[in-house]
Image (cartoon, rainbow, N blue to C red; front, side, top):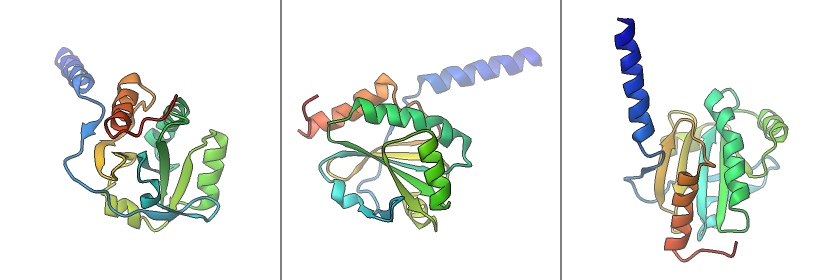
Length: 172
């Protein structure tokens, strides 16, 4: 019995490792997104047209969300100066809680507040973390539910390919 359980776990881990971390998104245009940041300034997704946008729905009580935040920051750093932006949407918490967390890490990407969880529901973010990669045209190109190492080379290469395919490549 014990050997069978170990074999099943091994098969599951091999299958999970073989799956691509970013799954192509079958849908099209992204839902609207208009939320305040930690300082109260309103951000609209449409304002980021022409850039590749990583939209991450998260909460401080979510262990996988907390674990992946440093890798999102490393990805942002690696793509600095290029047409790439991160919008981290905090789901259902207060500005104070989100700010304390973001400052403690620290992160330099934009943190938006979805206090009433309306945006998370519109985007279908039923599991946290839920992350979507939008192409420069505003269409969702990839999605991932659960924790991911966003700084991994294969993830970065896919995001760079979105920038290059659309002619939005900026100087390194």
